[in-house]
Image (cartoon, rainbow, N blue to C red; front, side, top):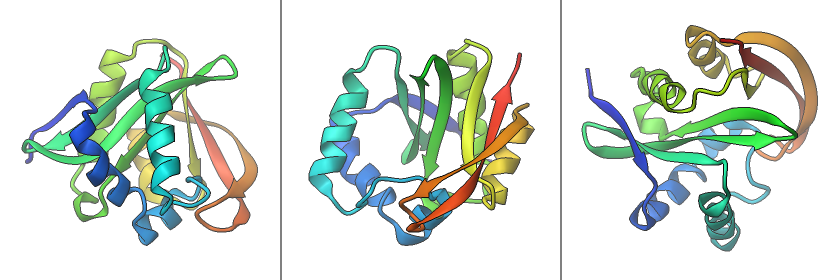
Length: 158
């Protein structure tokens, strides 16, 4: 099993994170993505904004010392939410679950929420294994699908 760790996002991570977040299959799976995942200027502006926003905890996810994704918590409309992105070549190895457990150890506010495309079974499993429970559903425009889709809202109560 590969060692998974979190560390602060560094400037040298940005090229790899940009490439990960514009992979077409990953974008489709995540669904709720940037309007244009190939727009590097928009990506850089977004990363600069979140890296400098108080209350945002953003971490690089490493596996065996290699950058394999990112994970973050942020506050929106008074609720703390989590989000993560793992490079598709690393899917299916339990990395998202281990990274989420590490972030939840660091970010102790509860409740904490997550949102996921309702048909993203893998991400739903990661969240539910971490103790998140379904709190409801909603619909929203998913840039990664170019359509309105259902999303599942999950809550970690403890």
